[in-house]
Image (cartoon, rainbow, N blue to C red; front, side):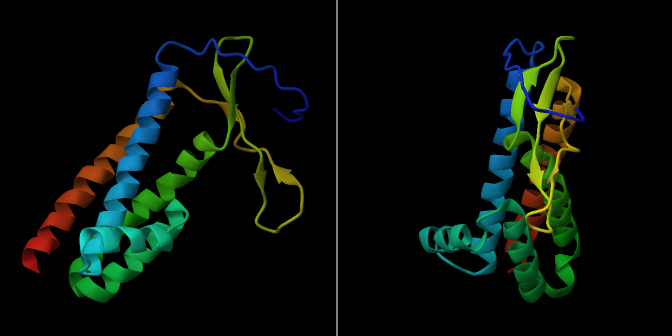
Amino acid sequence: MNDIEVVSIRSDFPSGFTAELGWLFIAFGRLEYLLKLCFKDLEDSRFHAGMGEAEYQGAQFKTLCKVVRAKAGEKLGAAAGSFCSLVDEASLLSAERDHCVHACWTVEASGQAVRIRPKRKKSGRGPIDWSESRVVTVGELNGIRRQAERIFVELDRVRKAWRADA
């Protein structure tokens, strides 16, 4: 993966790969939606207005996490601890989601799925970071998805608890 100039595009992915990649995207879509619901609740907004405002707050998943975390700190005080920890977990896990979404997926001659992931370095116009270009297994995608689903379930449980206390 050191010198990627020509990418041979193949679609004969390992069994279950495309389904697991799709489920990973679905899990993150659900998690993002839940974070927007949390924002709406923390704003004490009606559904359409609150969800619309949440949409404007977080153009990127990590940004939405920061906004929701800050809002929870303001509104929930000491009760924000476990909620904010879960939001932090979601934010950290989103890097893997980004690598999956913003990659060119193909299959190596060995039959393994590989993502080609160019990423601009934070410094601006410097060299492109290719370090996330690598083989990715079905099991790895499954693990990321399961983490996102776990965070969703726990975040929803915590959200319901502080909503009930309000």
